[in-house]
Length: 347
Ligand SMILES: [Zn+2]
Image (cartoon, rainbow, N blue to C red):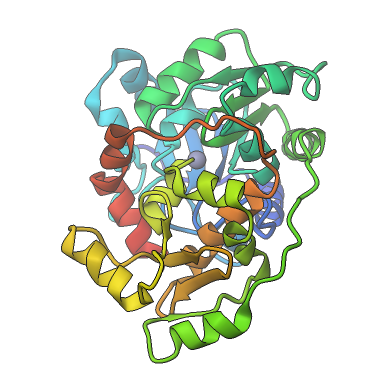
């Protein structure tokens, strides 16, 4: 292996600061989602899988990968490209992000990827591309269809990024921005976020007394994030939430779609029903017209992704046609070893 690795100091400090700022904003990043990178010659430093961008200043969350080797593997359709740990310059440490190949295909020095709520509120809608044209006018942007994060997605992005492009909207997933400096790239991320900003709807009152009695003695309780109840308090939003999964991290951390409690059903009975069907107990349950209840043992990552769902749906208009992940797309996410690793680290 080559000479000892030294991160590009001043630049690296700036990357850590920008990453921590993005990571601390739940409107941009939830749990271990999103990632940032910087290229330095033949080395690309990228966030490690399962770590939090919010920790970027306080902890060592970046790992070095061999950039030319990774790029070759993506271009050749080599299956190794979906095993980013194979490209680590230091073995036995943290694994590089499962989205490493996505960063490698950009020629620009700095790449930042977020699961921005305002972007997602557009990117889950069928006619998203037409909707984006106005707000993103003047930016050098493109959109790619949904495929599982990893090499297939990197290849799609690589096709549109051949002519250097600064912003790529990932359908049913998020946004990726690229630039030659950290300041410029960070500013571009915030610019896209602002351009796509949508004010949230939803100010119905939850029936907290009913939820309290329903959850007494059960494995469910009331959520800390009060807006979550809005999923239950409007029939359109209830349908949108229970219609399926809208983006990958929801599937990884909250399971497929969302479950509504049936009339007369107890929360524990709903959980048992799902376990008998071969799935884990739902992380949260929607109680129609009453509110939302969450598992008492829900992790911070579970909470972050529940919050993400309501933050997105409060920004999707009632008549919108949504694109859900297919059964096959849900299945490939749930049976992906790399994701199992990531969700185990981030509990
Ligand atoms: Zn992502």
